[in-house]
Image 1: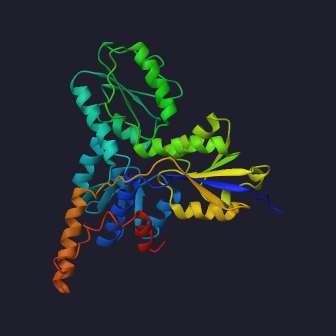
Image 2 (image 1 turned 45 degrees about the vertical axis):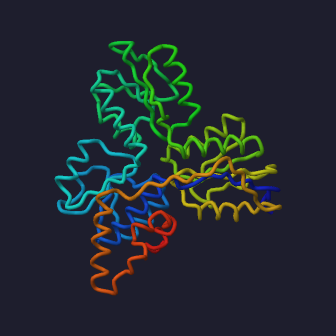
Length: 351
């Protein structure tokens, strides 16, 4: 008989952040407006279940913008794209919708401004990650990427008085703080953003895992292998001496993990759908049910990309022209966007 823990403690917040909500809803609108295939540069978010859901309805994910046929509609992913990619997409595609997370856009703006002011920029991130690639491309001549595990390493600025430190938004806050501390010691005049580059959702989910680690023998993190923020959650748990495993779904839970575990903690990365979390609860089947551990509430909302809002407005006008007009007091599609969730969007495309 499989081991059955006494309790399961569910972290709150967990799962989709505002940027992921926006990106999934945006790509869903693309599927509804345009005939397939619809192209997306890089995975819209780093979750294999979400990617597979869109692939089933005709979305083609590409890693090189040259793979997009001329005249096809294309979406740029939530992780941000290099300026050269944005330019090439605008030349090839009939329609380009940029679903970049506004928090990533903030870092891009910082990098461009700092480069123009002559700073040597240290970017703390994971080499090869889509977000890091796009950010470094904003000012490759002025930026040095350092991995959080290795820190500043051999970095030598032209002018020690003009050094800036910026971050990949999905970093673990503890690994960021370690690099920040050493950079401040090395460069007393270090420039850093007044508002942290780290995503609020990343920080909140890590704080929740830190609390779970005080109460649990085992922590399960739902999310895909290429999700940086998901991997950070696993590291936070392990750094506190708690066994932790990343899983894409309940099917990946190993029975041996549950042996001897009285309390199991459960959370999900910022791009993992909540129905996968529900399946994990069912699979773990805690003897005394589950409880929620909440560290904060989130009310952030990011509207659809401006280009897409224009298409949605036109589509609504055309629909209303052929049917009974919408009463003036009734909200339109965009007015209801805040209420319409990414989970509902995924249901609408038949998943």
